[in-house]
Every structure is written in C-alpha cells, then in structure tokens.
Length: 230
Image: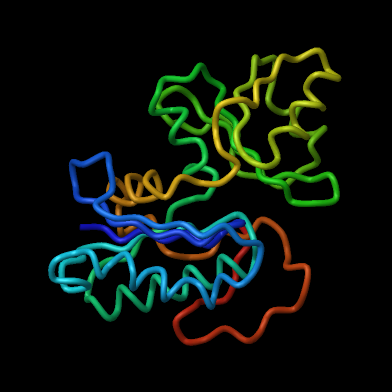
C-alpha cells in the first residue's frame, strides 16, 4: 500500500492506493493557500486510520516535489521522508507537472499535453508531454508568451493554474489551445499511481525548485536536503 501526499500547491492531500488498483483505498483533500504544515499530519492520520494495520501496512511513500510553493514543497518532502523513516519504506518523488498531466494522458488526450502552473508575475512553470507520457518540453520557468512560442503549433491541451495565461498567449500567435475539463491542482490518486511506477533509485524525494524562493526560508532540518535548482 502506498501513501501519497501533496502540499505543493493550494491544497493538502493524502491517499492510500494498493498496487493494481485505480481507485484509492482512502483519500482526503483540504483546499488552502496556507496552513499546510498544520493541516498535513492530522489529515494523514485520518486517512491512515482507515487502513487495517495503520502505518505498519504502508510499503511506500510518494510525495509531490514541485515545482510549486517553496514552503509547501518543503513541508511535503520533510513529512514524506519522516514517514518513510518511521515505516522503514522507500520514499519517491513525483513531479507536480507530471501529476497534473497524468489524468489527460490516461484518457488518451491528444498531445501535446501541457501542464502549466502559475508562477506569478506573468510566468509559468511548464512541461509538455506526448501521448505515452514522454517529455516533449522539459520542465522550465518562463513567461506565458515564451511558453506559447516554445510549445509549437498545437492544438495545445493545457492543464493547471497557468493554463489560461498560456492559452491567451497561444491565441495571440494563432495557436489553438484548450483549457477545459481538467483540474488546476494535482489529483492525489494520480500522485499515488505515479509513485507506484517510480523507481526509488532515481525518483528521489528532493525538491524540484525552478526559481528562487520569494522569501528567505528557515534553515533546513536534518530531514530535508538543501534546495537545488533543476
């Protein structure tokens, strides 16, 4: 059973998913712009309390590693590493952009499938994917206009909070873009599904920061490695 958690954007989420299942055994989500640290542990406790055997039945932990909120990513990665240590199980990192795109890939949406997160000041975190989930445009921080130019002729399938800004820029270039039908936040079920597929040796629970924080963070704890830009 995998425990998946997400605090990278405007929600705190957790779910339990068994290998081979597509529906979670248990899940919960609280939508919030702040307060993830206070909300996460009680939420995880509520979810895991539904599982016979509790934390002892967990065999893997997955966590969204960004891009997203600098503070939210740190909270999630710190907690995931703590749960992994306590349970003696591997911890894997899942890209927020991949988690956003996964539902569209799963239903066979026409590529390119573009995950875009609002990074403020006219910028977006963006990555595009092919029909099998292969990367077409690597994760990057750029202006919405630059993203539209980099994504090609389309039509574009845009997902995430940055989708509307990229769509407007694409329309200005004469490129068709669709932002309908998918959520602006990662589906925790798909964080878990991607976590089950991830290789613990390569999908490490390290923050994926594509820009510097807006404010100076507190000194990292022993559970969280220093931030690195990718």
